[in-house]
Length: 252
Image 1 (cartoon, rainbow, N blue to C red):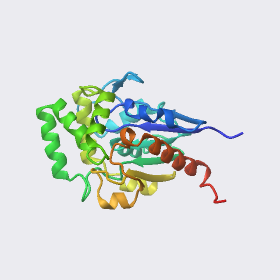
Image 2 (tube, one colour):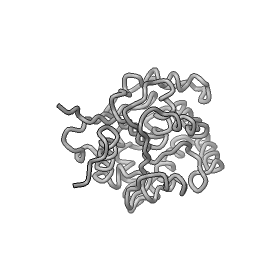
Image 3 (cartoon, rainbow, N blue to C red):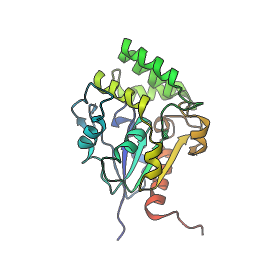
Image 4 (cartoon, rainbow, N blue to C red):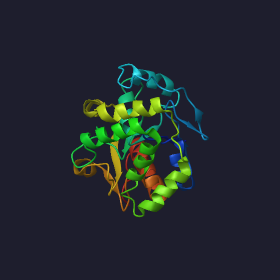
């Protein structure tokens, strides 16, 4: 008797589990999908978790996050980490058992890369966040939707899902920005004891050409295919996860 395919979907900076709601009608029968929130985030789907330490670069912050997420990240599932969620999921494999597979959605080994988000651009954004966290968060939502086929519609859909205020407190968001600035998973990915693959919208404005070259591409999508291409994204995630856990289907 076959075991149901299990996927654990992990959201990115400033976004909670509601981002995955558009995919719900499109999962094939037999897929088991969970969408846990990161510590410090609160959504109607999952509830709330205590915020992280204010010291965003503390060496124990990842370990503390792993402790909170241990029961939410089963190692018999395929983890799908979107954007910062992909960076964090990779980093947490140092503290938690590796999953059956890891899909990095709109993510690579680092956040800042040539041709994508530069270190200077991220530094400017962090300065803007310190001046006005909510305004910066809204700007980031719009920034993420630039590569979608209808950016304004994608931004409205994202805003409808998330509301008008961030789903995490300022300390938690600041911690996440520190991770975006500093996490480098190149060594972790080289040693990870599970299959890893990258998936991205072909017009993702946050990724550089090298990251896009390494990724399976979703046609006519950007960094937020959850709101612009939910059916195509669910199909691609299910196929990639199935390949990781059972091997690719043979051609007839």
